[in-house]
Length: 221
Length: 221
Image 1 (cartoon, chains in turn brown, blue):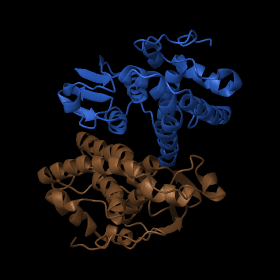
Image 2: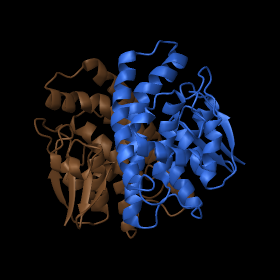
Image 3: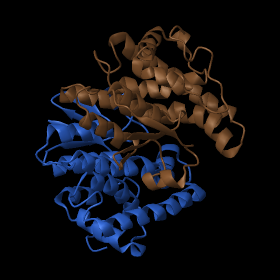
Image 4: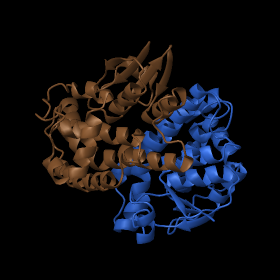
């Protein structure tokens, strides 16, 4: 059995779910709270982070290790280009979203609106959320710029860069915080991603205690 | 020409320098301040982060993209094991240091002691530094635990995991903040890493305005 320990508000969990679906692998999901992992999950990943991938009793833990592992183990449905230099461009953008977008946009918005509320029972800090929303405008401009010049974010083909971006953006979109109207090319790109079979499962996601924005699951948004 | 835009207090710059040296590649270093990148550097890497790798007029930017690029471009001196499952274990530990150690230890200590002082001209916050030092004790225990069981951090052979760990730890050690005495196996591991030819250049590093701890460059520390 292939198992993914995940949470619907964990962008790296979403990233790995999308990779698994794109690679047409069957898997079972097990939900854990990122801020209160069970002892079982901590045993699987002492780093205490999600997602955790388990297959045939073996464990691969962490966003970076799992995504590279799946690419090496299932090269038939590649999510990285063939040429080494093109792969570097895809990975540059993966890091852009996994690291920069995550720090500058995801953390201030989602840590305040979801983690702080449900893990600490505290009210979100509007100043911190606003800094995340300001940073989001800069990142949306960059996505829009890329999407205007390229078919997909890192080039002509759909890749891990699109997955890393959509994993983060889809959670912000669940909260209704993505200003699509100002970014036509980014919107066209996201509607292509949203239409992929791999994305349908994410559009049915439900984050406990928070209703999705009305347009969240609509292909026409 | 092969150029690396770097800073001696940037752990990801140190990581790539170690990889380049282990792969016996010749390169030229160009120093930039991480908190005040020049316009030239920002043009090479719009993410605004170090390091940046330039060869034959082509650019690879970011820790993740550069390290995987160098492994693919120079497979003769491998820093990842052959078996896919072993590669996942190495990458799990790379992520441990690049992400978890960096957030929990490096940032509170080095951002306060170096970045804050030189970029903002402010005094370091002792409470934040102490939280980093407390977290460091936990991480040293983990390194010690791994080093007791394995020849190198991710298994029998030297790998990218050792490089990622040593890149972070060596900067904390420059500041004199690593409590080696409590962690015998970690100390033996670090002395092995410190003795490697690839490490000698790092031991000559000088971070402007801060003298290295007395033992920093000693192999017997």
